[in-house]
Figure 1 (cartoon, rainbow, N blue to C red):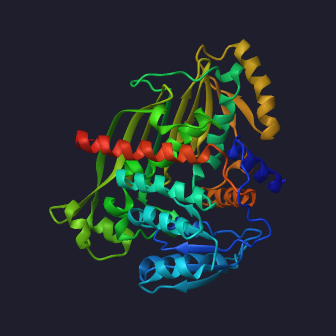
Figure 2: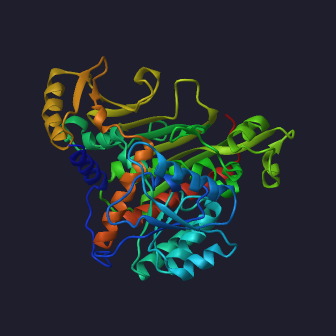
Amino acid sequence: MRAMMFMTLLSVAASCGSISQRAPVKGKSIKLITLDPGHFHAALVQKTMYPGVDSAVQVYAPAGADVQLHLERIKGYNSRAESPTAWKEEVYTGSDFMQRMLQEKKGNVVVMSGNNGKKTDYILQALGAGYHVLADKPMAIDKANFATLQTAFATAEKNNVLLYDIMTERYEISTMLQREFSFLPAVFGELEKGTAENPAVTKESVHHFFKYVSGNILTRPPWFMDVAQEGEGIVDVTTHLVDLVQWECFPGKTLDYQKDIELVSARRWATPISLSQFNAITKGNGFPAYLLKDVSNDTTLKVFSNGEINYKLRGIHAKVAVTWAYKAPEGTGDTHYSIMRGSKAALVIRQGAEQGFKPSLYIEPNGGPTETYAAALQAGLIKIQAAFPGIDVKKTAAGWEVLIPEKYRESHETHFARVTEKFLEYLKAGALPSWEVPNMIAKYYTTTRALEMALQNGTAAK
């Protein structure tokens, strides 16, 4: 039953779109390489084992705390009591680690999650050497990176290799169901156009620098707070939100960034981090020299981790926004809010105290919960239940809450395995769905162009 559920999740998340056969990996063992793993997402790709993937993983990185933290996380997965993994990390930490990786060819898939200022160039070099690349977001953090990324996709096409970014939020169940209910004309109607003041689609998320990962307090590398290396918030976490807008509003459709996207406005603002807070999350002892440009009064670091983008996608007004705080209040955590406005109803995801900080989906008909609408919802629910057995609805004052069985609620950490499994399917097929590459390009155009606009407009206060 659990395996069948995962297959359902994976097939729905993949959506539609033809896959052209080019260079399948059939019959070949997939061998992973981890390159310069500075972010904990690199380890989460290996939180589980995968059929057909060699247990030996090559790690190429500069010596230092980043790679050591990565290896400790893998060791933790190997030694845990429940479902331990069996990865064997083969590590090279010489100063010529990149050249060695390109030359040795000890694997065929490079996993990247680390310093985003270096990542786009890493991607281009790996693709040029004939490696497939599975990269954490963001794959581009500014205009220059975006140009390099376009070259990278052209290089991947030329060399018959795949480049794919890790979009975990497509596998979050309330988001998947929001998308599925939007496919029901009698329930949702048609997606509204919206306005700049009242967008048809809004997606907002709140994140925290201090957090727990795999049961332990997460150690952030100091460079994570340097926007020149991590990227500003408007080009980092917003990547997920822009991706979801595209994925939900235009499923299986190919987007042209030069024709389909119109930036309306963008802004950025900083989160203040005290010296003591910085030391707590980095386990360091003071601000490194490269951060002094963002430090005021020798005690407060301003991290431009917050951003908001208002734009039009094929005429549909959308808004995405990301906010970072230092630490969530006790008993809370990261939160997500999303609304899709249809001509018949709004589909709303809330994740506040009322929802126990679990993402919950609501269906709120524009004319109120009438008997006629209730009948249409019940008819549509049968289609949803065919793909997601056990999904139901419960009446509320404004409409209905979608009841989601716990079996569908996977952790954010588990979603990394879902993305990796889907990428492995694409490797075996030999290509990505036809819409994925142009839509990745459209996504990174949106974020990097928004950063340009926000910088031109100055820093917004908040």
